[in-house]
Length: 225
Image 1 (tube, rainbow, N blue to C red):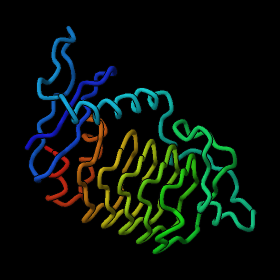
Image 2 (cartoon, helix red, strand yellow):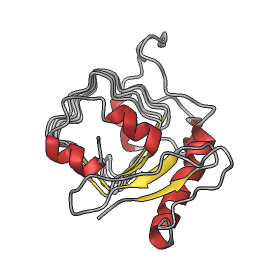
Image 3 (cartoon, rainbow, N blue to C red):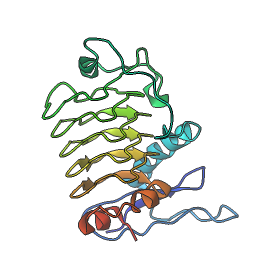
């Protein structure tokens, strides 16, 4: 079964791969005259892709934080790691926050309760450990997760927007019904990552597929060519 795709206002085709696992055929964009819209991009597929299209347009002017960008000094707040259990809730779509979340070097391994559904806008997460954690329904916008570990992390129903996962370990992570928009996975370890009903833009998909550590089954599920 093919994926649902829709040409966004910016010209990127947005795709939602569907089970069973198969190679997804996506239209790249409308032609120069703006005359091509996939005839099969209707119903539920149109709704899902429309949501991502709106998110992608809002995100276009706010790129992912580069790995080379200078970061602030490590916070000296005694309970800074526990701040993730509260999150921040102001303007999460644009990475605006009431208080900065400095989670660098924190260990949330096998945390099954306190991270679920939290908003982690612009969180600094480099070198932190989230192995085996339940991060379902999390909203991560403009987070910096370079070198962090997410082995076996559950991102079901999460929104992952403009997150930098460069050199992160995502081995066995679960992206089920997850929105992946504008995020980077350069040199990330992605062995045995589960992609199921993942919502991802066509351009983002092309970039993700460049990661050679993604196993063949996952590549088929995504529609990598």
